[in-house]
Image (cartoon, rainbow, N blue to C red; front, side):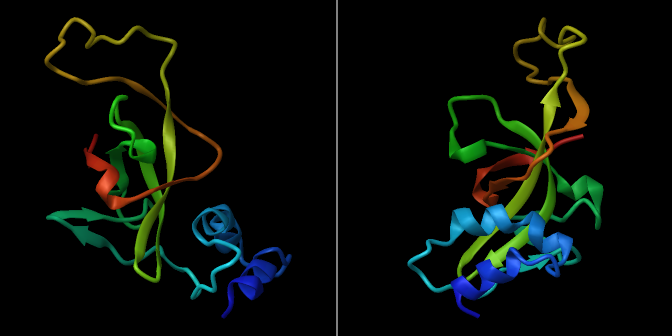
Length: 142
């Protein structure tokens, strides 16, 4: 399927909701000038890379909770997120991630322990997906 046909299909009302959610990921990853194979989206199959297993939250919540450097920017603290989808396109593997919002209602109880880099976050998630790569992941978290 050519990229133009796939873009057309993603804009149709008959497109399944799961694929409409990853439409923005497709638009960011595929140049309009390049033909691409369809994205394969996984909700059931784990990804194992460098000894760590990553899954979607619908499969195993514990393996979907990650700390990652959003945009591969390492001069800021890693962001906690939850993997909603694992997608593969040609030779690119990526994650569709919702990250957790900071907790502003309570001061961080770990601020007095500079060598223990723990933080509290809200249980609320942002309302849109962000892309991430497995190499941006620092660790799982609880």
